[in-house]
Image (cartoon, rainbow, N blue to C red):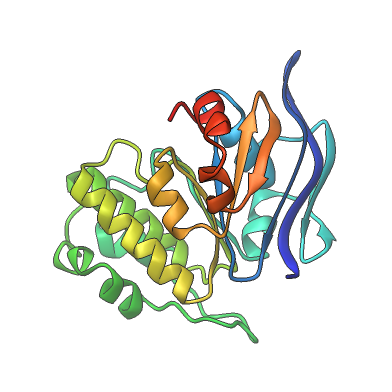
Length: 237
């Protein structure tokens, strides 16, 4: 499959600390890739480097084969990469409707998928019920739904979620995974960071495990489950 998003031999430093060490990763059209690893292994740094929030010290970031390594974050977003950060990043003083409206825009010509306000609210009925509430009045699960809905309204080609279900109650985690399955069925490629091996394995086409800033494993969920040593050593399960 043709890669929409890929990194090649990506290196990133924070001062003298070498965080990413030659990371190569690809996300193809309609594919769901799980990015896993213990805390401090470089997952968030990789995503922030892809999004232009951190400058790499070496390597390449490509979108549709074009070099975006030094591109501004808004250029990366315009190219179809949407980012739901850890902590969600919603505007607490704005209502649910206002949070969504700031991301609502016409679908680019030739886009394969159209996400509208109505479609997002159908995907998240709870947001429709809370449309007039401020972001600060929502539960953690509702805030995550809002963050995902806002990202979808940009009509992305790749949706990146950092710690998709971190800190959420089991019932809400189930709702988020069900939502990601529907997003996958709609043809949107996703790169998902999460620690829930069973849930990730149920939705992902491929799994990439980072170990001290390097790719320690890459394969299908079935291959990961068949390698208990890797799961125990690098994921703690």
